[in-house]
Image (tube, rainbow, N blue to C red):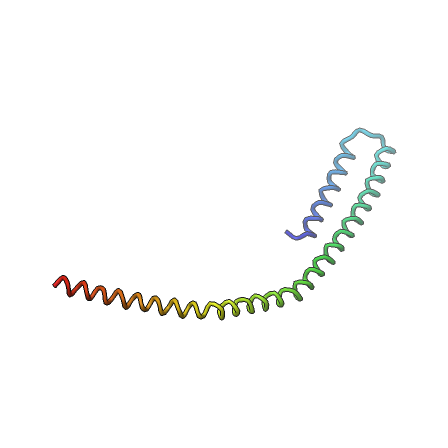
Length: 120
């Protein structure tokens, strides 16, 4: 949900609530006009506050976007460098493990041949 849509909904709901309260209470004409005028002034102030908050939110999002554009590529490059370094550091172990696995497979084959010849 977009922030502007949400804030518009809140503002519309506030106006509807204010109008409902004003017209549902028994008041004289002068009192009603005074209440409507006061409610109008209050709503104008609330709309100003909402506008200030929306502007602040836009500025924060803009700042965050700018920071992300600067920070994310550097972080990705750092991660790539770390992965490359890790791969280089594990390469000797990988080669050693491959040699050991090949030796185990050869030993198993020899053992199977020995067992096969003994069973004959």
